[in-house]
Length: 413
Length: 186
Image (cartoon, rainbow over all chains, first blue to last red; front, top):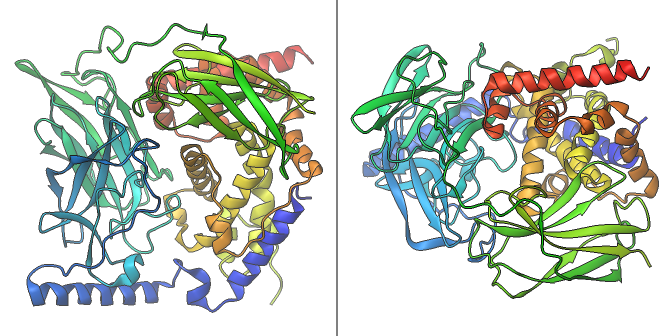
């Protein structure tokens, strides 16, 4: 028997509707192969016609951001003059515009990576595979379409170097909105990253053949585009992966053993070394001896005991009450590299719910946070609410590196 | 034509048959409802969020059924790939999306106390999860990542900033410790 019979019934109704609709409408992206091939052929012909007429792809409407960005919250907005198309490109396995990358520096001191197809010096996506109704046009990707790429980190602090492997990216370059769900016909395995100024080149495996390409000097940017995963030892259902880190060569990021990248070559002074998926590589980069000099962590478990007030109000939510929590910020949050969060430990369950306050805060400011359903997961008549601060870029959690600003015990009226 | 015994079908077959037959999707749903609820309940610490996220994931499964390709991995891996993505999106946006449910025309849920209790029972009845909580942090992270979230060793190694071998050792030691405690308390 289902634990959520209401959900099961709703799911079955939707499933019935889907399976009884005419094939094309019902399956959405699961169109029969014949239709896919027809659409792809038409799109290719349209694209070819556009190229024939003008020598380049005709340009359609720009990709629209999915969400409105705010300068002082979340990723921030693109900083003026902070966006640049990088000097790397890679041919698509099926031809057409090559793939490229842009970095976007944001107002919250993050660097976001955009991936797409290059045409006449612009980054964009193609009207293929369901994107833009298969119109075969080139659609520019504005710099404010960020945080959309799948993978481990499309936006990160500038000091962090990243190496990402993402499968299932549609040939169009337009990222699917939910998981690895976008490609209907030909998809791509894309390996890309920013490896920093010491990086010289990357080596990848193309159907068993090792190939090496230089990275962009200075940024260490690279992009490699391969056909979608074929059945074989590498097909583990991986949708994305990669690693990131702020350390020197020899630390993170290391090539992902499940990915296309097999080695990263660095130049350290007069010598070169490699970070490789092969553990016994003769010229392996030396492992960093000490922890990387990242932002200074605060003392573990520092408790400031500052007042935290919580005002309850009845609401039609689980537990019957929502609340407004207020505290005075002891530290400034000038960007996305630090932040406050509200933690709600659940002593009779496991775990702690952490809600980050993902916005800039002035030191000494009164911070007000609405909380929905404060008693939804309470196991008694009261809940603990803790305000945490961390100067790490990750979500603040209790423990080393975080400050417990204050705590409130909220009793159910 | 004789009716198929869907309960004997593999997950991958169910998704394939489900393109034409909703009953196959019902069997698939039944196989994974608890697993998804437990996954989200443990990740979020809240039964209501677990229900909401599970609903969004099953709607996403319906919406993207045709894109499942068994040659790229199992149906289970595909399903939990969607689940992990949904969880990451939720943390980032601090809200559970209802986009897939709206697109598929699924009704909003009205969760009752009984619903939430049934979800909580998934974790509170599980003695092994209590033992899991008693593991040292590094072993717990490795066991949770590998066993409950079904993530790859490489992926975990990248997140935990250690080698795959170290992750494997932590998983192995964690499971051994849990087995020993289970045996010792019998």
